[in-house]
Length: 365
Image (cartoon, rainbow, N blue to C red; front, side, top):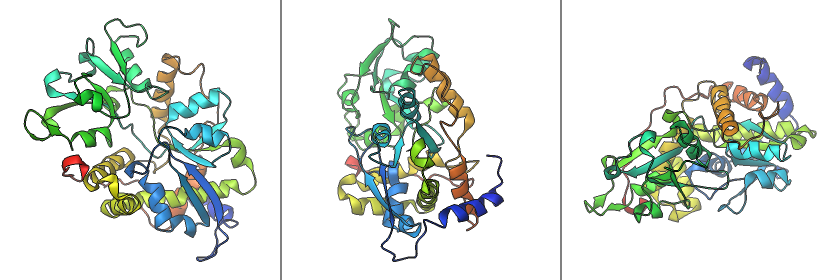
């Protein structure tokens, strides 16, 4: 991390010399990346890098593997069935305690997308309004931010008698059906879909005034989410650091493209799957960009304060038994990729980026 960006330009050039091939060369290096969900703007950078030829330009033939929850990136990468994966930090750290030996090589999302959403009439305006309400929560290592939030207000999530934590699916059907008072959601997915639903009270689409949204980034219980992982032993093999840098460089180039040309990236996703819904993907692309940009130290560079916050909450909740081992994340590979992109005068921090206003249509169409 002490190496200057100038020196890193030279390092990355040397590392990539054995990986980059000329345009049109069929001898591309095969690489697989396991996602934790299906095609959507959450993963726009990976799809756009593939579709616009950014991976091929770096000498890579990248296979993107989707999941509907059946394939966990930490398990797939640990087993050697994919070289790279995209997952949330708590999952990586817990897997490493079980011996997975995974490394976070680029922290793409700078902020958490998790929120608690409720209808305005429920009166749940802050975390301190949660007691005595039915709280929807995901399970299987997706629950820790909600559990941390209950701890934040003075209630142990496993023994607080005034807490009603209800296992929730990855959609807001139970909230709409009145089975929950407040639900766990992702701002870029569930909340966007809610704005595409009809409010029975008004006969119109839900509007911001109809909802109360608790942002866990503001509460102080947010945990780091989408990052790129690889096995430490894979990275140690000859030329694989160069492959990782090439992958990061192409992926970050695509995320920059999706920051500056969001509509173009939405159209690319819709060409892959026309059923995604244009306005929902526009919403999602805008909200995902908010989680990435601005990236003060550069996209993919770890925010150590948020790393510490994530680890401290996991330790408090007994989700981790001890501090992660040194080397659980490394910044040298993404720094090398950023240096190469900066040498092309690309903006890797997005300091001046501003979100747009998205008009949601019924059903996200």
